[in-house]
Amino acid sequence: MIDMIKGKKILISLGGTYEPIDSVRGITNKSSGKMGLALAKEAYIRGADLTLVVANVSVEIPSVFDVVRVETSSEMNEAILRLVPDFDIFISAAAVSDFEFRKKSDKKIDSSSSLFLNLKPTTKIIRQIKDINPEIFLVGFKAEFNISKDEIIECARKQIADAGTDLVIANDISKENCQFGSDNNEVLIVDDEVLTVPLASKREIAKSIFDVISKKI
Image (cartoon, rainbow, N blue to C red; front, side):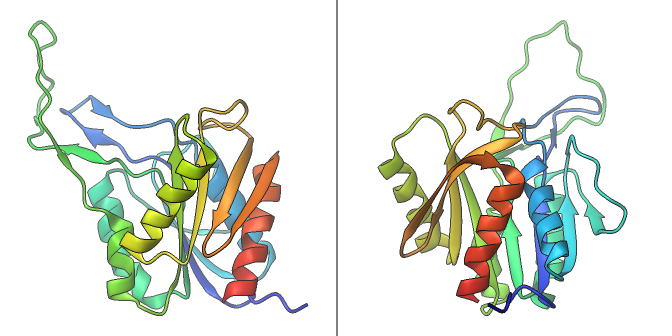
């Protein structure tokens, strides 16, 4: 069987964004970038023309990859919207913050006083992609916490309806060995059908994801 990934231009986002409160503090999440890196390595092995948009990660990104470094959700949004018109496939594996601060201090806030954090929603990057590049094959990720399989599938299909994603990789990060930063995961690959990938290394999951993508494009 011919692997349709070879020669495709693939953009992958990975890592967790960081939203500053002041000059030294901020909020982020526990995303390690391990799943995104596993996907990047698999795409590279299959002969893709690859670019990574990398936020905060706990993994070392090999120098062989073309990397765009970002920190905040707005920086990631800007980078992806600039790049995505030129790609065949976009895999949105980054854990992008859902909120940012309305007002950021350019100094360190005095810790002796109470602090009220005024947040606003960040721009949903994935919902803009198909407007910019309608032909792109769009893969989203959906991490939920301690909900049923049916609820996870419903969340994934809501993303498909809202953002036009062609495929959603959904998982429950409350499960043992499936948390942010783990080396393994257990996922559902969702479109019109649902493929269950039982607990496996992220490398094996990346292979399964690209096997599905290769059949769909």
